[in-house]
Structures are given as C-alpha cells and as structure tokens.
Image 1 (cartoon, helix red, strand yellow):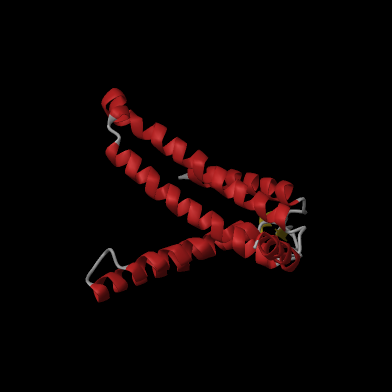
Image 2 (cartoon, one colour; image 1 turned 90 degrees about the horizontal axis):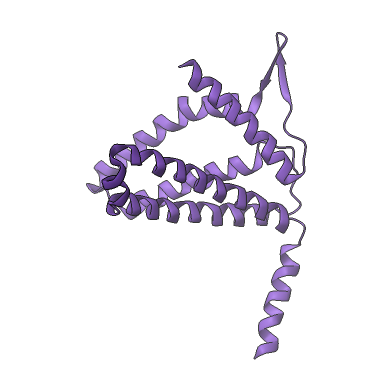
Length: 188
C-alpha cells in the first residue's frame, strides 16, 4: 500500500517535471500546509478522480448499458472517448503554468492524442488476444512484456501530443489555415 502511494507521488512529480520541460514553462507551485509542500494538482486531481469521477463514470456506464440493453452501444463508445479527451485535456493543461497563445492547437492535439490512444488501445488488445506466440513461449510471464510495452507506447503518445501542442502553439491557426487553403487554390 505504501509503495503504491510512493510510486504515484514519484510518477506525478516526474510527469510534472517532464511537462514543464516540454512546454518550457514553470511547473505549478506547491501549496504550503503546516510546513509541508503539497503539489495541488495531483493531490486534488487524484482525489477528485477516485472519489467523484470514477464512481460517476461507473454509475453512468452501468445506467447506459441497462438503458440500451447493449454493451456495444455507439453512445457508450462516444462517452468513453469524451472521457478520455477530457482526461488528456486536463493532463496537457494543468501541470504547468504554461499560458497557451492559441487554445485551438491544444484542443486539436488533445483530439489527435485521444484518438491515437484509443486506436493503439484497440490494436494492443487485438494483439494480446490473437497473438499466441509470446504466451506459448513464456507462459503467464508474457503479460509483463505486454504491460510494459503498453506503458511505453501510451507514454510515447502522450509525449508526442504534448510536444505537438508546444510546437504548433507558436503559429496562428488562422494564418496556417489561410496558407493551407491558398495552397489548394493555386493547384486548381
């Protein structure tokens, strides 16, 4: 139990540091409480997720499944994707004091990241279920390789999304689209 809390704190601190380096911005400040420094985002965010959001997601997931009498409802898939989109939006915007010049790029890169993450999640699930090579060679230990590779791929998707936000934020979206549409007008 203690090791999970320590790992979570270390991961959150490491993520905060990496996000501030990618966005070239100061990380969020700590809150001082009785001589202790508390990182407000992760403490507050994790508590909200586990105490409020997770039970609500499970509750609405069950209600929608009962309402539609179908676990493969399109609305259910859309709601899950919207939840993932909101999670990545929070993940990209809160850990640092970065003030984005153009929030359009943040929303666009969060969209790309969430879609990429979902596609890779489906591909990973398909690969684990239908590729029996590792399971036959290594037995039940093969799940460790699959889980570690999933963690690395997920982390890579998040980092690429954050880097895309940072790079594109220097450009005005209106100007980019004007040049993009102008390129097609010259071709015709």
